Length: 76
Ligand SMILES: [Zn+2]
Image (tube, rainbow, N blue to C red; front, top):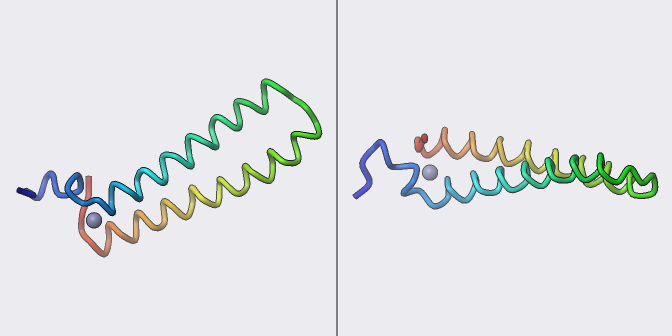
């Protein structure tokens, strides 16, 4: 069922971690776009905080994905 070349697709944990990373990255991107459109100053502080949180999330997701790939040997 799981040939080496398609192993990552068969690995639900790898797919979940990748999804987590992509979602955080997409949220960060849309938030950056949103900020440019509105330019409201009271919103900017909250946006900065949220951006930092999302940047952390993206970095953590990348680290977890790398860790998992190294430990599990499943690579896309
Ligand atoms: Zn895996």
